[in-house]
Image (tube, rainbow, N blue to C red):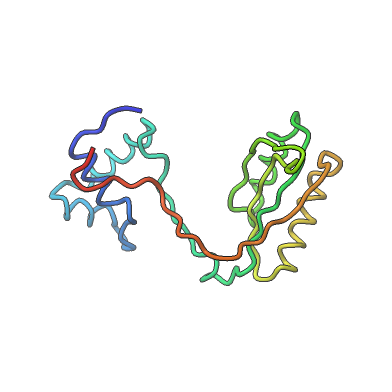
Length: 163
């Protein structure tokens, strides 16, 4: 990862908790920092290109959107097919994230995880069945783990003035 200068640090600190929900959010950030909007945008693009910032994205509150049933579907997929199947599952509009993790036999045979959201558990179970059809015979086992509480989701945060 590359080093950041003080201006980059100030921009990260100003945006890490969220950007204003306005027509020109980077203009607001720029004004608050005494910078030009184009510079803020260019610096953020540079931070992303250098891998300092991974992404800038909206984080929806699924519960507020009526998605009260949230299930992590887990699958035991043949290792040689997990990348291809993962891409297909990750492209589904009701899957918010899909990733591979190592198995932990004998208790945990699953290596593919996909978060599915729905208004009800029945809806999530229907979506799970759709994924099962997509995977077909390449899945040897599956399960679903339902969310019991909301956890605050944040990325790494810089502290003001810190390194």
